[in-house]
Amino acid sequence: MTSPVHTYSTGQTLTSLMIGMTIAMFIIAVAGRVYLQSKRTFIARAALSSVNENGRFALQELRRTLSMAGMGIDAREAGNRASSAIAPVGRSGTVEGAGLKSDAIAVRYRRGTTCSRYIDRKNTDAPATINLLIRDNQLKCRLDTGRSQPLVSGIKMMKILYGFDDTNDGYANRYLTAKEIEKIAITASQSTAWQRIVSFHVGLLVFSSNYSLPVEMRAKTDTLLQLPGLEYTVLAGDKYLYKVFSTTIYLRNLNTVLQAQ
Image (cartoon, rainbow, N blue to C red; front, side):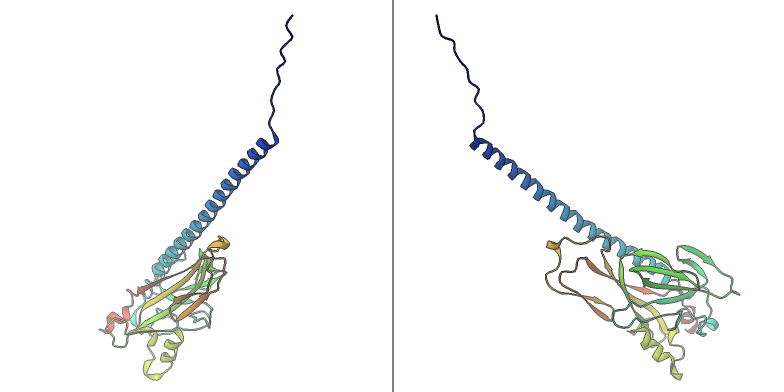
């Protein structure tokens, strides 16, 4: 009689289990690193896309509004500070922000697009006053004495220089700040200083207000950004992405310039 044959099942040894766990942990670590890197890249691209989109759209809104200054305003009205194409420095007019504060600008016209709407006022009515300003990191628009409405977010600062025409030929000979224009305007010989503005040089400091850069992608040293008439310093380690957008806007509706020739 033959003895029975016994079969035994072989299990996993401790060594093989440890090797398997090590391989699994390695795969998880690699996958996690790839995921984090992808997430950082996505956030950085989203920040850049947001900054570029807001900057371009803000310049578009500024150009659309500021280029209409003087539309429907005749030479007689343009000589009056209360109805000039560019509202002089004042509480409800043009403002030059001190230090790191933003500038604000106010222009006037009777017909054109403003504050996301179209206006068409009679010549017997006062021209509309449109204020463009930065509040709560937003580019805002205010029509006359109404409430300010936001146009574009993520705008840290706006600075403006004014193209001054010394020779009455319709071209800017120099670019000055609002206070420099006002200083010229208060002298007896240059009472029409604000009528001599033929262009604006506008600079916007735009930042990624909705996206914080990953720590690894933040600047290691201070960065200097140049705005019209101002140098802005972004400190090392700042969590936002910053970019300057600038443009020159020519005033095509200044009737006083054309009538003076």
